[in-house]
Amino acid sequence: MGTLYIDRKDIRVKLDGNALAFYSMQGERQGIVPIGPLKRVVFVGDILVETPVLHRLAEEGASVIFLSGKRLQFRGMLHGRMHNNGLLRIKQYEKSCKEFALDIARELVERKVSRQREFLEEVRDRRPDLRFELTTAIRTLEGVLTALQERTGGPEILRGLEGGASASFFFAYIKMFPESLEFTKRNRRPPEDPVNAMLSLCYTLLHYEIVREIETIGLDPTIGFYHCFDYGRESLACDLVEPYRPDIDRFVWELFRTRGLTLRDFSENDERPGCYLKKESRKRFYPEYEEWAKLMRPLWVEEVRNLARRIIDGKDPLSE
Image 1 (tube, rainbow, N blue to C red):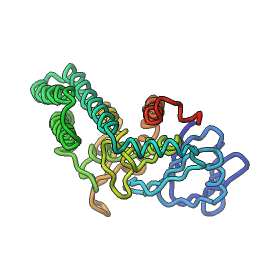
Image 2: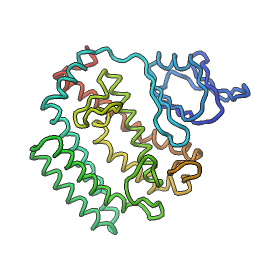
Image 3: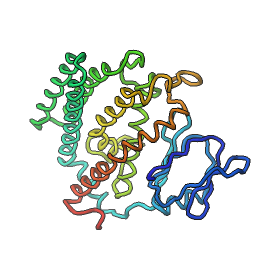
């Protein structure tokens, strides 16, 4: 067990030796989970957590993520001690203002567009009914890749190419879902349909997985190379998420394609605007996400470590 999701109202979490113990508000013990195997704990909604629980999780190096109850929006994150590599951050700040930043940005965008093209090519082999839409998008992505490989132009040109590629990708991606899901465009805050609800949730989970790795290794998550500095935004995490967005897109498509999730799993506009995954359906989603994320996490860890090595001139930042 690497990740524990706690998504239940009216529960109190206490420390019991080397384990987390769960109690109802009436004092009845509900269960116990050992802390040792945990890498991350996700608290969802209204849960009472005693302070010693957070102390022990931080001491053991387990990250804690807090999400809101219904919308599953990020509220905060807790870590233990971070890596004390000040030199790595100094190098990061220096290189964010040099040609190094544009080189990294180009690589990230090129990898993202390549994965978008590969995904659509795979779907085209399985969906001959969408051959025209998918082929049109693939050709646009190929044109963007050709332009990227010329390695000319600055950040604004790069953002324009990436934006055009995303627009073409989503033109085809939308067609891959049944009309009953009412997925007609990418929207968020709040998401207006089941597909957008899942894309937003999965992008959020991915983003904070990357933030965790960035902070653990000692980089500054707010200083990016492709995304400009914006107060309160983890721009470096936004950078490193880009090549993995097509993996999220594929994961969400498979969830609906295999009917792991259906329209019945979502509620719309019952209390607040938007479309959200129902509480009972979240119980099915968490294991699905974890099964997928277990395969992806080694890639995310290596992504961050490789960037740190490049920032510090090829040295291993964990040896400093």
